[in-house]
Length: 355
Image 1 (tube, rainbow, N blue to C red):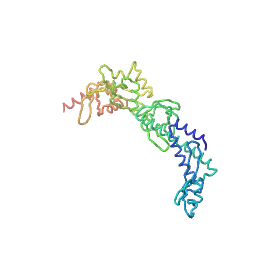
Image 2: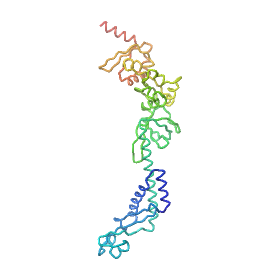
Image 3: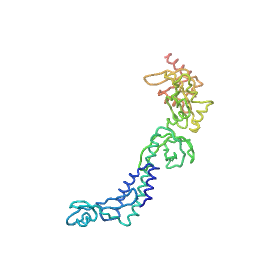
Image 4: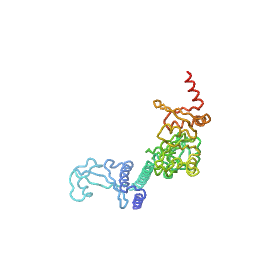
């Protein structure tokens, strides 16, 4: 090896932030292993010196000064020891003897290259982990790359991430090259580097999209209270204003629906109902069944159940297709909701009175 390697180490330290001293220490340790693997002599008492100024590599073996040499690999007599150590030499001293093989330069260069590549890879993995661990529970923008065993591989620019099958929306198109926003649910270290797991189904994806699109939410003027979502189909989001002069629903909808349309487009036309949150559970439950109009709500506190009565013409709308509207309203409010038409409710009450 030569001075060019030192220049390379200097550049790596500047560009990758990997300490030159750490690299040299690792190279020396690796060279000891390489020497022991390729050369029989002095396997148990070898030291490697790597010059950080010139790049020169030297191999030394330590020998103990003795009267009579019984083990040539680890012992040396006084007469020969004076050739390697300046000053007085006494029995029991240790001397360093250079035993650098001529062909060791090639092995050293190869070993140094492997160490550098490995250290760079470790540093890059560490940088990726530190960059994306702060993105957990946040949104990232990625480009769809390919499919592997039903999982979608997404290019985030600095790293690749995985969108597992159970975090995919069935009706969504994940064609190669498509750009979309995704929610980061996990970043963990593995032997192959950080594993970044994404989601398109998580309710908080919707929350983050509203925070990005609606300045009033970002600024804290409007608060998202809760979300109920059936990804790819329909969602309900309950919001409340912290300022009397701010319209929470209007802020989320935007001028001519511009803000809500932008979010729906990102979610590939998932329907979104923006609900006015209210501290009174009766009012909140009635609001949650939007777009249906509710006549009244009766609460059964012990059962955490709500009886909701609507006009006859509003019954199917309040329940929704395959019960979706009522189901989402129940998730949003935390109440079990029974919906009855006005005529059905009156009939049942009349029957009870006649009994």
